[in-house]
Image (cartoon, rainbow, N blue to C red; front, side):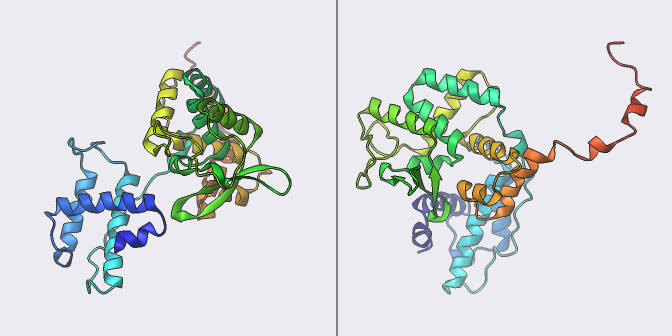
Length: 304
């Protein structure tokens, strides 16, 4: 029942939740829901925090731990809501504080160019994947689920695509000429429909069976292009999302609410983080330390 309620919002969410619940109950020896205690939940939390070399990855990021804990808390909250349990043992369970690492996961323009060139050498699919993320800031799952019929011409002539994001929420993103040309090159090469058709059930990008490509395959394309480009960073589709958002936020005239919509953020505070990163380092408290020149006079330089 719980997974069915999640599936109404997003099939991908239900799939992810199912994996977490299977892991949770397996760890507890498939205990009955009504017999699970707060102590059991703490054991699971500690299991997530500790390295496990039978798990991939062995060490989970704090954000991953928090996502799994949030899933368990949601499950028990649902069980109490429908009256299956009278006490929610997961309610006191807390998630960990996550330090934002967005600033460390942004590509320089030269790095992005190198990845684009490497992707172009690999093939039209790889190039499309990189350009799509660089031009839209979408998530990997959103590209994986994108359909050809979702592309349309807006009233003023712009090409747009409807993207289905988290919580099954739709948003509309404009397709710039660079991305449109890359899409057509890829689809022509694959022998796929290139005329806009709202009745088409063709995925935007396809796997070898002609179905939607998986998020994992898309992630691998980015990883391979990064290695080929010689960029020594652990780049993922989300790095390109961060890079897109930060590049937009650099412009002080950019519309914060439009950026929130384009990224599919439910909270404007999440979007504001990019503005702080993009604009906040140009002038900070350090730039107003008037005593720095005086201190520098007493320091011997390495080259002197």
